Image 1 (spheres, rainbow over the protein chains, first blue to last red):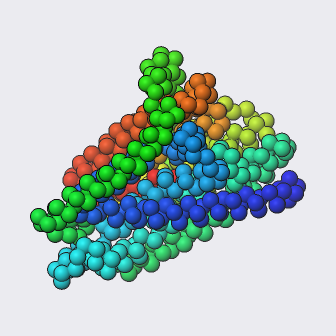
Image 2: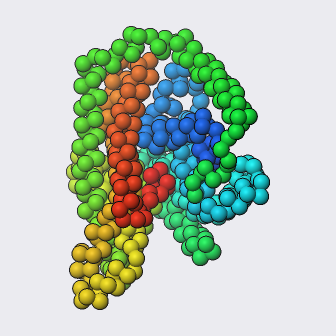
Length: 215
Length: 281
């Protein structure tokens, strides 16, 4: 227990780094994911194909391999960035595909009649998406989006293997330094993650039930 | 909602605009790619000699051994996760609070933790209390702890998705609770949850790559070994080859899931769909 109390400062730093990684990557991935989702429902076949190809490719690749490409291959073409930026990049590339699928499933959950009505009063594709479908889709889509953010928080731990000093990396470092207190130290790390993931999970669940009643 | 409802069939002017836009877009992407390719080529990235490394027997054997190790860990973890997941799901559905509550807490706990942390827990924590554990079992048990929790939720969602009338009818003809579950609910639920289950198994297969962190010689680790041995400039061909292997294996599993989903929906109605969040983790 002492080992945890003595290193509270290291924990705090790790926690903040994990939070920064997650917030930055979530924001970027949400933007990229929404663009991809719009591409996937657009009337332009080229955009639809490009969006679908991106999602299929990324979905079937392990996140660790995405990290490999970013961290080891980019320097081969003279792109050298701090490891933190590499990690944000890898997390963004990977999770954009899942944000895209969550948004798209929200668009698909809006009743057909809504889109038909929008079309029949003469709205264009952009207008019916912007004014009719997306505002309704957003409500149903918030719980799944929160769940993807939770997954992203958990996945940010993989950055530990690529020289980013976030929670898991701090935990491993402390565990290696205090061989007699490995379990308390790792439990401390676990608690830090649960502080982030469990409340978000409950929030998503509650929102989901509220939306379910409205529908 | 089918996406085609959002717009009318495109007319001649629209088709022309799409054509022009597509060509411009493709050209733009081609220019960006061209710059990237030129940069790689300037450093000899497309040297045929560089890619010929993939034809070397030693490299091929290394990748193949890695694939076998990946599949071995994935298969053992898949079987264990489904067994533990089934037990947890039944536990969580139990009428007795003293069974349902702990099972629920267990599932929420392990779903809320990063998989990598669980693996490190077993890899660093167990030796600290005097239990020796091989990298293989540290990886497999970590994967099992995490995925059994997720799979338990898939099983539960499958059973809860069945119409209430099924349970009521079973009770009405005098079946006990256990019999209802075994004879009526599970056989129907299994079909409904197959798509979500398979997509979770794809995720599990991808997650075996975390074995890289603790030094289990799977596909990715072996690729890294090859690159470290041959030199950094070989990272492009080697990692590309590994990505192709992963995508080929996972995409064929995903295709199987989609085919099963279509077949199931045609015969038995709605299925439990995989959630983007579970797939991401």
